Length: 166
Image (tube, rainbow, N blue to C red; front, side, top):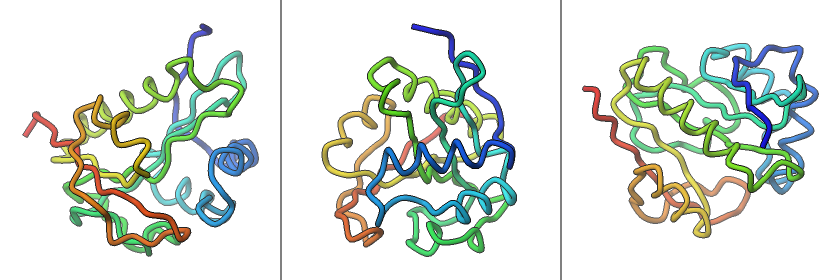
């Protein structure tokens, strides 16, 4: 397994990020290129890419909020982002299919969790589909049941990771 280098995304990474997003999510659920651009522009310190041999193979991105669940409007734009929010939101954890099942998603998530702790956040929150609940529980996330989210027409579950640094 090659060494994953994790760093903040820049707008120069946008084309690679957008193409990976479309490989990882159905069109109705995938973030648009404009949405990804806005996320990088508004909160680049919470948008991380993973590179192998100077090639982007995945990313994790989010925002900050005082809300305890992710509202669907958040997937559309960053108007709900609050720099000093107590919770860090995970919008997406994407790894190019060619690089999946090598632990890179786990590395990206652990990096994001460490970032949340450094930022003194109380929780990391995300929504996921049923088949990923067990995966996120392996990080310590707790399933709070079916989400009110109707993003992309899918059934989502609210997951919360309580951080111990507060």
